[in-house]
Length: 74
Image 1: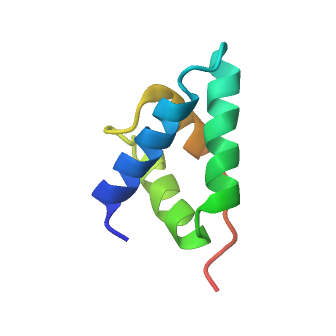
Image 2: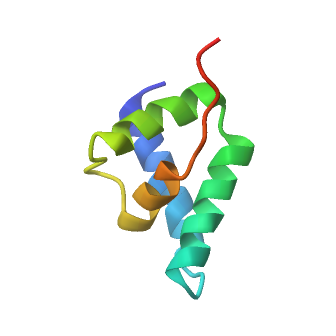
């Protein structure tokens, strides 16, 4: 999938959870959403981007993405 689109989608999800009262709740909400609803290929791609710095990800989205565990390519 297009990386720019994944970043936009992840930041949109981050915006949804942006109203949570604590940073931990924002991060957990985004991470849980990505783990439940994103295809492993999408998670692998956004995780690689975040590990390279993820410049266009909001802070709590980057933190959430870095928590993801992704199965190896099969």
